[in-house]
Length: 162
Image (cartoon, rainbow, N blue to C red; front, side):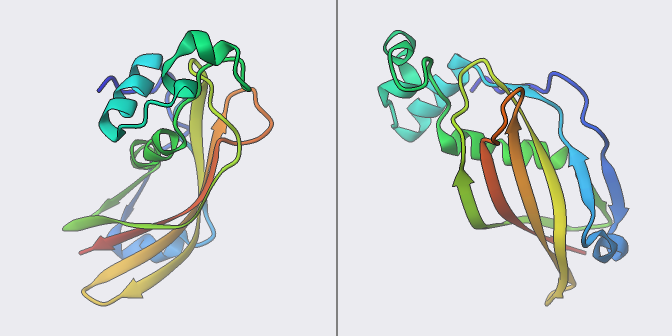
């Protein structure tokens, strides 16, 4: 799959040791680098998910559609949350990192092919959990460069075990 590579450096990477993760509660970690969404990436995602709706994979027809261009699948944009998250937080001294899931996801605006997206996150809660772990609740917003409304708003859940 052709990946959308970061086109600018992220604002900053927060690196914290495991025993200080609880101090992240309430902290905004800034934003990831911008990533350009390509038609090749959209087509590859369509092949992987068997979702070949014309609004995504037929650029000529999509020009006449409701958005005036082909758009990325919402779940493709959401999947970029993982690589963008790794640009924002590194927890040292851990044995395992777990993507625990999502509590809420909204696709609030379409992402046209050729657009650039980045993610901003705020750690809203950190709880100690069984097995020498911590559970992070993160508000994530994937914005579209030059657009008023974001592409995705999600509550993202992560676990780290030492």
